[in-house]
Image 1 (cartoon, rainbow, N blue to C red):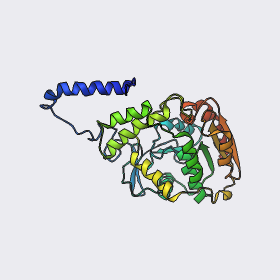
Image 2: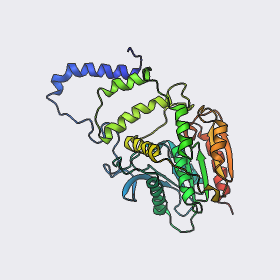
Image 3: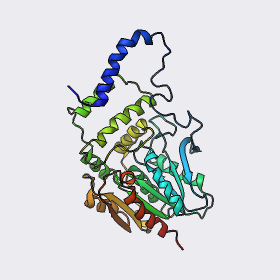
Image 4: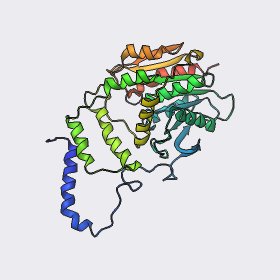
Length: 336
């Protein structure tokens, strides 16, 4: 099938050049495609210059901003399999009296990679608790959670198990709080036509980038994620947000776990009486106000806020409309 995609045209040109230069390359130093740092950035266990912490039997890429004694705000990225680079604007909350913690979840971003047989919902919850305990300097220190997409689901799962441990909760368009709802939401936007140009582009590239090493899989996952950002996508996403590295194995294993075991993060939310700020976007056609109200209804006290003029990635593309209500909500909970 003829393509006009510039990435594919460039790849085709490079392949042709490769054939012409093969005699030259044969006498030069060669590198394996999955060598650290070539296809994707190195992880913290491969590059000790990256900021990291050791918790719960793994090494996580993590940063903290502000005074360690201030109320803690842990920021949770989407995925599973994303990273926190697109949420770095949240460091601004350090100027509002919070100690802001961001980390790439296990097997995600620049954190250490693991095999696919370890991933469970409980493991993500335990990792989050371990991160909180790592940075906590006083037993009475307040802890707040801010999560986007899957990160908002993880924040809810944590609160569902620890309703007295969290002093406030900002949820930015969680996919769902039960597997049933999440599966329905995914089905409304993740529809790929195997005959469209995007699909054929992926198949074409897959002829040249093969293997089951984490580096190769993460590289391919990043390429394939571009389908979510194409013009007219149902999530209303304006473009490609910044990220370091996809977590392909984490993503696949997590979805397989959900399919096999399901989940329900609402079983104990009736015990969480603190007001929750629940934000959703205007342009996400797979979400909308009705679905936002349905998901938020699991909380006894939820304030819904629509972010206008943006889609699912509004924490990045509409920061100027996300930050003020989030700041007002959070600061209201630490004022005397």
